[in-house]
Image 1 (cartoon, rainbow, N blue to C red):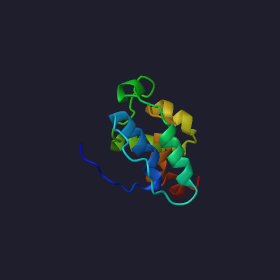
Image 2 (image 1 turned 120 degrees about the vertical axis):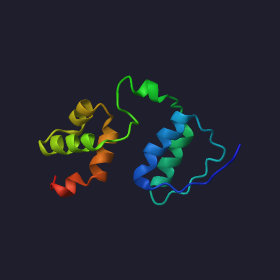
Image 3 (image 1 turned 90 degrees about the horizontal axis):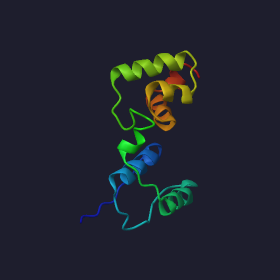
Image 4 (image 1 turned 30 degrees about the vertical axis):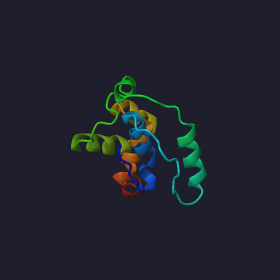
Length: 116
């Protein structure tokens, strides 16, 4: 078994942790170097997490979970975002969870682009 040390951007932390849990990674060292107020929260979340799930299980409720975003997905998200749909409505239409929708909105800078 090999060990690695990673530095994860704060805005990608939740996704990364979910991905590692999905892949069944084993935590050898629970020491986490996270700046600011997030350090205790992040450490608690990892040490107390008992979530073990598979992408297959998640896709029962969110069909497109962990799938890559296509140009068409981005265009549909942008159009529906501009029409004023709320995050939970966008999640239903795009068959993803709310966290994925918020992350994509942030990545595409839709709030800044449309002053919303």
